[in-house]
Image (cartoon, rainbow, N blue to C red):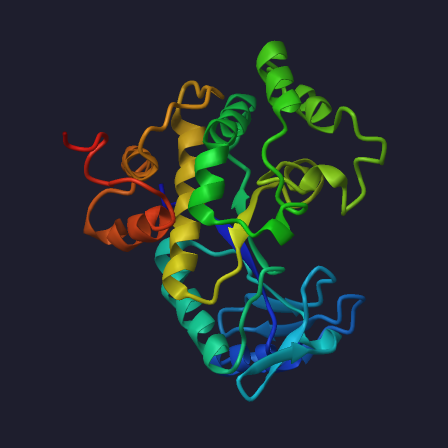
Length: 299
């Protein structure tokens, strides 16, 4: 479940891109450089040779603190941290500690900030991609409530398109090209455009077909809470593993009488078992109603 490679993008404000990069350079014992691109990218090359980027993103509401108040700030306070390729066992503690360092330096998030997780797509097949589409479609409502996706961000991480899901399951594509054609059907712009409108969904396959061959999950509010970020990463890896290993996944939405119980049992089924993932289960069920222990209330 945890073996797939991934990358993460964390949006925040409160400090400038340069300050964020210098905090990272100090923690990672790396070299800071000014990228000088359109996104005013600041780069940190760590001791292991991997590069962490701190980029401008126009969707971020820029703020800084004056005393205890948050006030509007300039574009330098728009920060999207883009990690290099990571693996869970080797890198999660480093990522979590870097997040803590950034928060201590004054970084914070607001409702305009999001987290995007990119999953290595090299092992995916037409069957597993169809599975992924159906898994997200069937759990749309539960995930959106559990993750408390901010209304301001809904335009950037829409729910799975029911028309696309119906087409995927009616046509039963057997090749990646067929899946790609279904994904882009109905859009007028060129598939090669980076900011293609199809990308703004919880599950984004535009990056799979035209980007770095990654499956992107966009349905996370940004956090500088190391435990919650770990929970989001584990969820993304578990969903990816389910899509890859399950023979068939249905898009049918389950009946949910007890949200917290439904989420807990689902998490257990996809690998969130034991003490190691206790905190992850707590973070991912905290916003749901009901009881995690009992499906039905005792009479």
